[in-house]
Image (tube, rainbow, N blue to C red; front, side):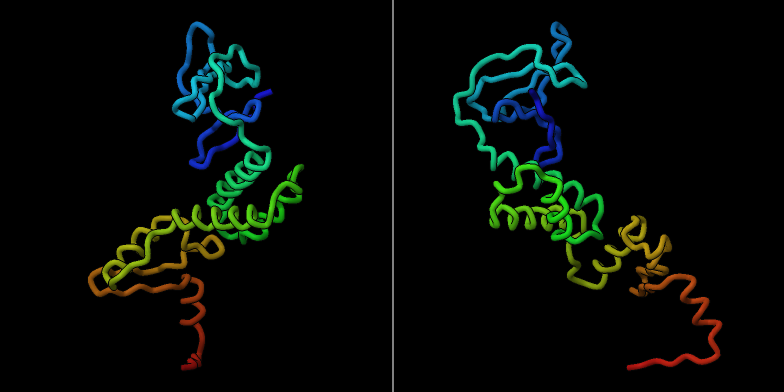
Length: 192
């Protein structure tokens, strides 16, 4: 039986008999996609119709060791959590890992080092979605201008970045409700 999971790069791969396969070409004669082994020297191929888990034909044999169950499990957990982590940036990685461990069947095969590696993978995947840290004031303003169009600077479905002026290098972080409340107050007390 073929199992489809996501790879490290987020593409769909097939797991069959302890080996990984990636989607290659569509073969019209078989009405199926060709799935190849990612090891360059290996000639093993599977032919699987679209939206199916049945194998129509196999070609070649593997000339390398099959993947261990623990490695397959670790990669499945890591890759699914990386996709969830990028999709929802507000959940802590430790909470995501605990939830995945509860849902996972063969969790006893994971070691502490595996869990640590999964956590680091989550942090690395999240870091890719953020821009690099700016080194000057003008780079900071440019980064804020790029973030202004995205949904990253929302608080309660309201924009938290009100003004970004690249000419005077001024940025105002607030919501319109906060400014209205500040303007309607008879007295303003400031600390500092």
